Image (cartoon, rainbow, N blue to C red; front, side):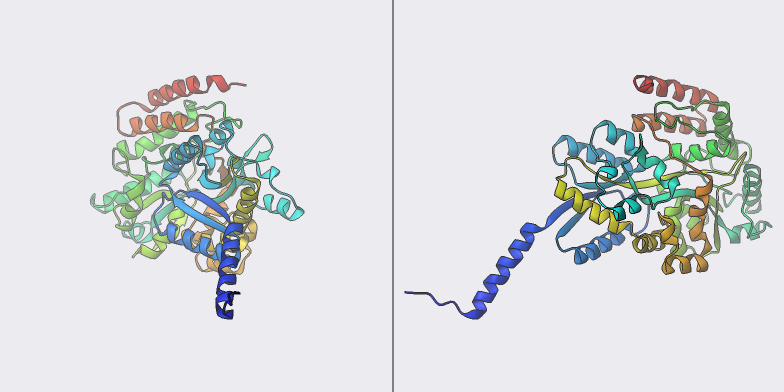
Length: 426
């Protein structure tokens, strides 16, 4: 006896088989992603992933939010050790040396196959590529990238008798303006806050570079923490409290500083441009954004995260990861990302899009971080980077809390760093 199957049932079975086959052909990617700056970044990433998947139904991307950059590095390295490596991740641009030393990532030079892909690899701002390249190869693609910028409260400036449209150009002006604001508010408002938890080494690197000093060698094997120019930079940072009474003593929390600025506890703050959109949306006062003040020169280290692709991924997964990363860094997406978050558009082409060009025209602070790239430097990055940064963080905090004099603190950090890096000397 022959069983007859109704047409509708046949169509349903065919559809189920087709869906099953499609699922079987889907490349599944896991991406670790750091969320360390305020704002609804997870929602933005989720929306981008959903849009990508709708355009690329053969690729599925699971974004796992792994905490701040340090948390993401630890979680990723643990996953690698346990054999559960993700295919790609956004991690600190300065994690490069550790990832290369662990032989964990693949160079994008080995992944590109076409002239179009090679043009894409060369399309980013050179200043953002410094922390992603080593020995002539590119291992990191810039995405969530930043420089440190100065936010200032124009209303507070005006109330203190200062020109609300003129931020400080140099260290002396910042100290004087901050002290004036503190005095004019009868001690109710601080003049300036520079965060000293989270990433104190990053802020200190800005001070040092503004004083004409680079903290590390280009090959990541040496650091120069106790150079006289670095000592002078840390002494200036400390003096904002001890000499000028313009900044609170002790440490200033990275995670709550934006809220301090929004609540007008401080008239100026140094922070990542990644806070720009959140400040724009939440501030109930007029504010401005400027490049950091200079001493002997202008300058800010770059910062933020790069895309990496892991060696343990299959060739098919690596190709799918490339497709996703190219899509995420396309000029239109980079422009939308910059508008949504305040992070930089990572390529000149992003700023040539109608969306970002019009946004910058209506809100000029959106271009400050990009323009500051002209005076930028690569973020502190070395072998054993986590340990090296910890020695410098400890020194900075010891000086700011009065536990050690700046020179003594930096001498100690230098000795510890030299011991850590001794085996990498070339």
